[in-house]
Length: 332
Image 1: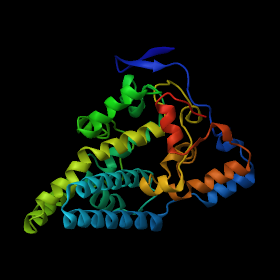
Image 2: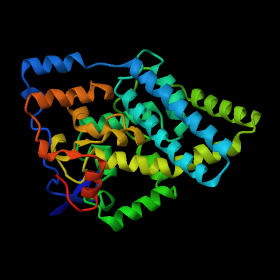
Image 3: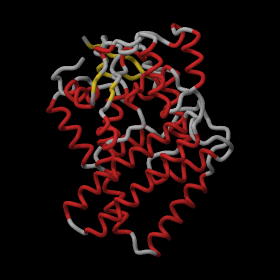
């Protein structure tokens, strides 16, 4: 059954009037024991050290991948390197998400540095703009005031996707046709809430791009930049962002609670290596406890598990199980 909703005088079709997922997490934080709530408080708060390590590792991987591609100078290796760089570009987006919740670098210039080292290179948005979008999503979850709900309501987000529709979406992502839509969706235009207290000045972004252009010119690196940065950004990264969005929520359910429309996916160890999603597949815990860093989400999972508040049969075991669900071929 589907219906439509009115948003700012317009209609967002179609909206599913039922949910698809059986909630894997059986209760909210208020139903946990005092001891469990104390354990959660102990793992809450920013983790700037882990954030710094992830950022440094990500840049190190990208530098190594690009070096291999340039030195090999062979078509198949170049293609593989483009895929691997695209995966690592998605990690920068996930670190931006972490910073939006002030779980990375604190202080007056924390957002500035994250913009410079992780967000400006992606061209799409800024920490400040994305904060307006994403924090509005948290506050107004699955309502007409949730910008993600508005943007992701419609045929492209009806689950399961089925093979034909998913192949069509992948084709649009890989050819860069969805890039502009992604940029618009994360721009925060028209959202006034959640302004950061010390926003990065406009000149910082201009200076970053000017300095980057000058450096690329000086080292004659434009070809490498276009092949190993721009191409993955317009193709592989868009596929990665699509995957992150699909694993985040089922969006076409007006008024749903987080536990009803957020799958819990536990990737295998090798899937975490190939696609390091910073525990984003445990997104249900992030919404229930947004003050807990990505690095601590597995501990939250164990706390809920010990408390007997998980439906183990509703958990997707491995990304393959979730892919099968997206294709309409099963699920927990």
